[in-house]
Image 1 (cartoon, helix red, strand yellow):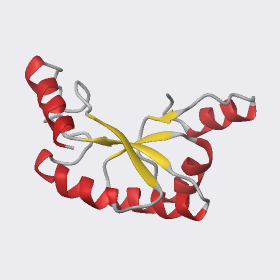
Image 2 (cartoon, one colour):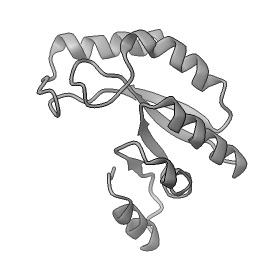
Image 3 (cartoon, rainbow, N blue to C red):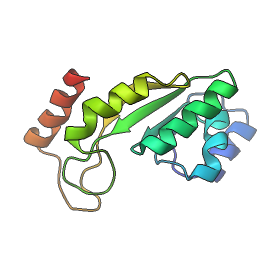
Image 4 (cartoon, rainbow, N blue to C red):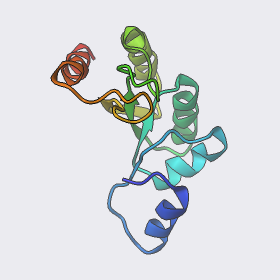
Length: 128
């Protein structure tokens, strides 16, 4: 797992063929690079997911995504109430596959992981 494109490029250029996860959502200008060099990425914006799908489908690929849900940290992710409609839209896309869901805690809003909020994440996983 890596958050910097330069490091991902170095890993690939040095012959590393292991799966690599991009730990952030890419800017639109780098979506094609993501499809070419990364196996899975964290995603929370439907527009970015649509673009990933478009480019991956054009290349004959399927890009795995980890759909991020905001459980109160306010750093990234879709709102829990938007989960099912968002998943339904993503499932209609040909070039991406939802590999799982995730959340970011203890970062921006200082919301620490607890049994309650991690339980919420698990409950959301069962909904999808």
